[in-house]
Amino acid sequence: MARKTFFCVDAHTCGNPVRVVAGGGPFLEGATMSAKRQHFLKEYDWIRKGLMFEPRGHDMMSGSILFPPSDPQNDVGILFIETSGCLPMCGHGTIGTVTVMIEEGLVIPKTPGSLRLETPAGLVKVTYTRKGNKVTSVRLTNIKSYLAEENITVECPDLGLLRVDVSYGGNYYAIVEVQDNFAGLEHYQAGQLIAWSREMRSRINEKHTFVHPEDPTINGLSHILWTGATLDGQSTARNAVFYGDKAIDRSPCGTGTSARMAQWYAQGKLKKGDEFVHESIIGSKFVGRIEEECELAGHKAIVPSIEGWAKVTGYNTIIIDEEDDPYAHGFQVL
Image (cartoon, rainbow, N blue to C red):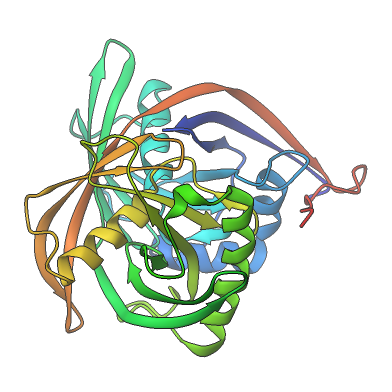
C-alpha cells in the first residue's frame, strides 16, 4: 500500500521508549510468534524502519506490535521492533507494552492481574499491580537464560584487548566486566561506549557464532553490556547496554538483566531466590530474581524474573506514505 496509517500509544519503561502499535499492524502467517517474526522480517520490515527510524522515531526508539494469540490459553502475541531489528524478546518492551495494554484496555486478561504472552523467544508470564487506573509495576517471568561462552577476547578501539562473556537472556549479550583495560562505565562518555560497541560487536561476530540451541532463527550477538559501579549503594550492579547502531538503553534492560543473572548464576555469584537490583546508565532500576534452575539443551540455565514500571506518554497516529514522502521508510545518520 502506498499510504499506511498506524495507531500507536507511546510510553517509556524506566526511561527507555516503547511505542505500542495498537492498530495498523500487518497480518502475519505462522503458528507461533517465532514464525510470524520470520514473515515480518521477510515482507514487513519497512514498518519497523518507518516507525523506529528518523524522522518518525529516533536512535533509541523501541516498540511492539500486538497480535491475537495462537493458543487460546494465552492472552496476546507480541512482536518487538527496535532500531536494532525485530527482536526475539525485549524486557523493557514487555513492561511498557503490558502497562499500555492494561491502562488503555487494549487486552482484557483472562485472569485479572496476570497475562500469558506469546513472544518469538517463547511464552512469557506476567503479573502486574494497579492503583486505580494506573499500572504501578509489571513483573515478567522470562524465557530460559544461559551463559553461552566465557573469556572471549576482543580488541577494543582505544582501550585495547578486553575479555567478555557472552550470555543469553532473550538476545545475546557480550558482557564487559571491570578489568585492566576497562575501569567501569562511569569513567567514560556514552558516545565512547557506543563507538566502541559497534566495532566490538562486529569483531566478535566475525570470529564467533551464537545460535539458540532450540531455535536457530535466534542467532548472532546483538548487544554489548558494559558494567560499572552502582549509583545507589543498595543496588547489586549497574550496566549500560548498547543496541542498534547508536543507542544506549536508558532502562536497566530486561533481557540484558536476565543475561547477566544467568552469567552470575553460572559463575556462582547468584543463587535461586536472590534479589538482583540492576541499575541503568541513568540510575533507573529493575529488580530481578532467579525463579527456577534448569537446563537448556545441556547448558546450565535459569528462568529469571524482572520487575519494573512504565508510564504512558501520549497517543500517536503515524502515516507512512510511499508515494509522497521520500523518507517514508526512515533513515539513520551514523
